[in-house]
Length: 154
Image (cartoon, rainbow, N blue to C red; front, side):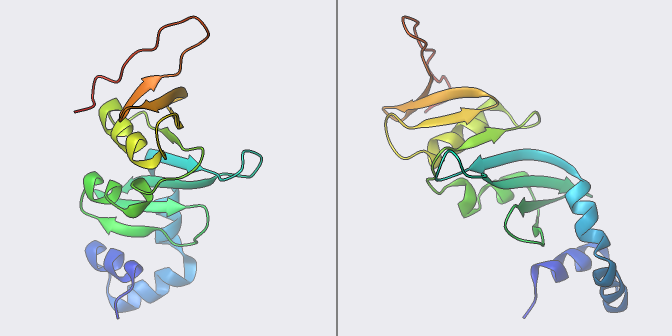
């Protein structure tokens, strides 16, 4: 049986001995954790709880998922699309919040539509609260203001 970490070491060209030595110091996992975050996704069932987080990281041209409940990053993935295709980004959750300075608003809104429950559900994307309305995300309206419709919905 091959573990996720074995795939990373193989991709990096590590020998089995080098892999074992590195695993003792956890340097690859540490480097992945320190790498740039492309997308951050947080959610919590209760507003007063600490949110669970999942971050998509890019390191040496490979993509990894790091979450707040597991020690080792998941991956490597060949592309950002492959990493974003994991169930974390398609499962409906409470109080979702998605942030990214590197991924397009269109992609973030697509994720947002996949993780909210139903009409009236709210997702926060890059600090903006959006409400699901008839399958589209629209800006949450202030009292007396008109909302802006999500132009990227099909």
